[in-house]
Image 1 (cartoon, rainbow, N blue to C red):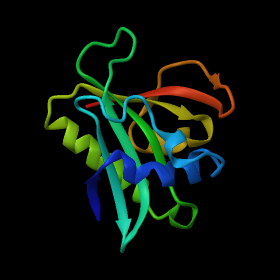
Image 2: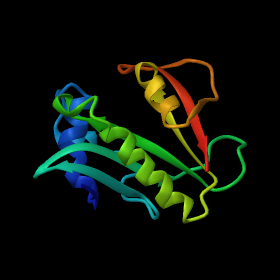
Image 3: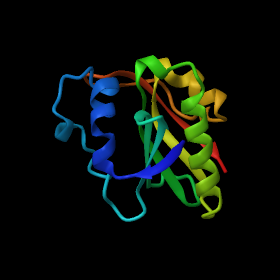
Image 4: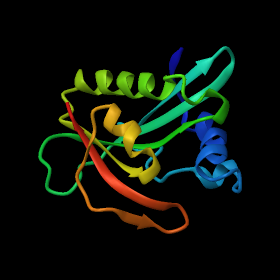
Length: 143
């Protein structure tokens, strides 16, 4: 089941999946978590928060239209490969499409680029490195 959740609800999953459980949950906050228009989604399996994603209004480069950045996409290891990530991204896309959003973009880890391609995103940048995290691409999906 997908729910709109508070940013504080997702910090533990972000830490486990995206930061190898090496930080405190508070260190996993993004500066954009609480800006106007930001929202957070969680996919629950029973009472367990299995997948999380955050989105906030943010245009990318010279792309015209209303843009939203997808950040902090994370699924706990025991729930990967079950389609929950695609389900939650599709939910976010449908939600933003109703709000006249023109596109969604993200800084996708290179290892996750196939997942985003399968969700309809395209690579729009050269590969780049985020220090301490690894190689990334900017990816976008038009709505």
